[in-house]
Length: 318
Image (cartoon, rainbow, N blue to C red; front, side, top):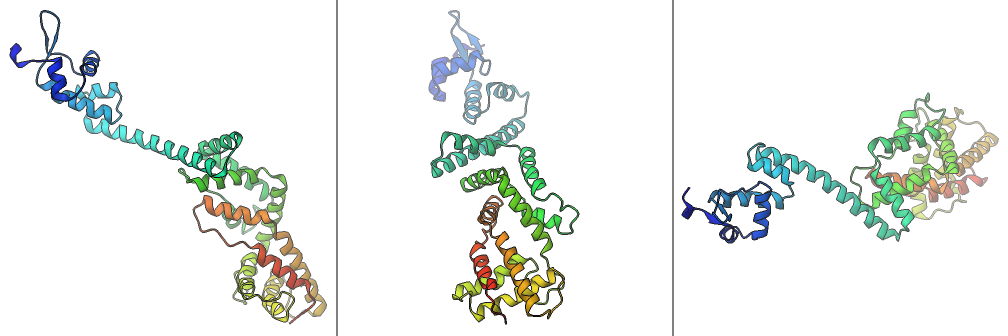
């Protein structure tokens, strides 16, 4: 071989911008072997070593491991195949980093203790199967006995959180708070009662134009009255609640025009029902659920329920 055409390791370093130490490392690893050696044992490289080193440096800067780089430069693996595999691996790493960032941001925003940070981290690391088991355990407890009800599927869907694979900090916190509620025995009991009532409070053939579900009927009817500052003890309030009372009567299968005593009993029964519904944790759950599922957060129903109960507890009737 013509020695004048070969490059010393120092010359190769000047041409590539790499250090002699780095080139020696790549050479010893078999990525850029010398084309020849001098009698004194010094390495000599051909001109192709420049392009080879450029490729090795590029692949290493992109994060490919030495074994993969060797396969690419030796043409054992197509560059496109190696690039696709590495891009896929980077996607996984990016998701992990984004998840970690969300947890740390959430912990910083909450001023979390080490215990809370550990909880946030564990919850976000749950697999899809593990998350589903956590949700199924909660829903199985609160919806026990309702599976045969026609509204079961709709009720279950309305209560089901679906945490995203890459939650943002707000979703991380919401998911953690939901997980805490899942373990609250008293809340489970409360939701079990509310779920049963929710499944039963759909009026058939409602002619008032209100939503069929009682809670939404209250929200639709009472919301404007609250905004207008209507006194719940007024005749106007009684008129506001009259369609809701009629709705509830149809839920119970009551006929219209049952008389003053029957109407009063219906109003008081509805007031009891709305009081049961007015667990502040209900609004908290629905708010957290909306955040986790990436949906608009519903307005707090508690003010409308409070107003409705006060209106129903009066003796005024329209």
